[in-house]
Length: 248
Image 1 (cartoon, rainbow, N blue to C red):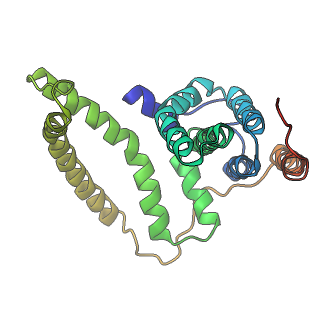
Image 2 (image 1 turned 90 degrees about the vertical axis):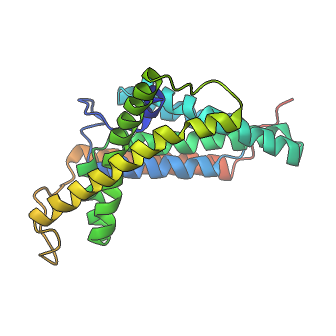
């Protein structure tokens, strides 16, 4: 569980992609997301996914992106089965299934290469309400903590004789109760500690607090933005105006 979910958790890196301005990384993810919506054929979607894997290679997070794709494989297979039953079209069903994988990967690339602090600064640049920014960033910060708590609780309950992998579906669901209750209790305790920490730091005392860090785009960031937009325009034109290949 922790191995699969690690594909969505940020870890610091020294690659050139990690060192980009977080706003540039957000723009790249948005452009890749938009490209997945423009693809009209399976081979076009394959090219988009191949480009995402190339970006992941540059960012040295290819293995983690592979975890993301493995985690979404089950949902992708479900989308494929539902569409093949409804539309009876193999190509359309394959397109929707691969599009779901590409959308998740494009989002994952941003979150696994951008720290919560950078995410907070990006959201502040869009003039979003401070409480909304704080709530979202706090949720992102607590994802790895809750995953670690879940793994530890499961190991502790297994050591006490709880069998999570045996029995029918109803029994397995019932066996999850000894895991959910401690997890909820830990979350409530941690939220209380967070509230006390916010009060001790006078959160909300200043209507418009200043930020310690202000991002300024470098020459490299500007070049990456121009190259990304130009590449997106070319790909969007070829996907939207050029008819797809008719495979025999």
